[in-house]
Image (cartoon, rainbow, N blue to C red):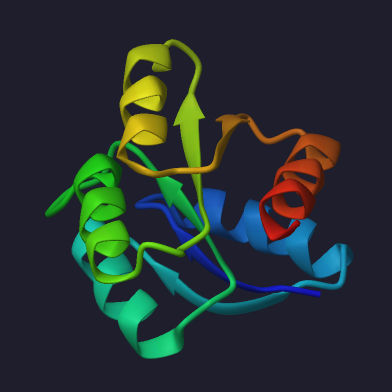
Length: 119
């Protein structure tokens, strides 16, 4: 079981992801709706894994990955992207994200990504 921080500007996406993770016996320790909140919550909550949307207001997911990895090089971050954002996903991986999941979420793919980054 992992402690997970969910970051997405869409409440519906956060709820969907939280339901998938809870069903798989993971604990959702917090939710954030932009990259700045993600960085603040990461430092405060020290989750095992962060799921991070790419396109958000205030601070993008890409900026948040760089900021979190700068503060904690061991952070385990999974990017969430809509179809057609491959270029940004590559940038996110280069910035330190360990995996990515595509929206709409496929339950088995979400769980597989979480398990992979925890190894």
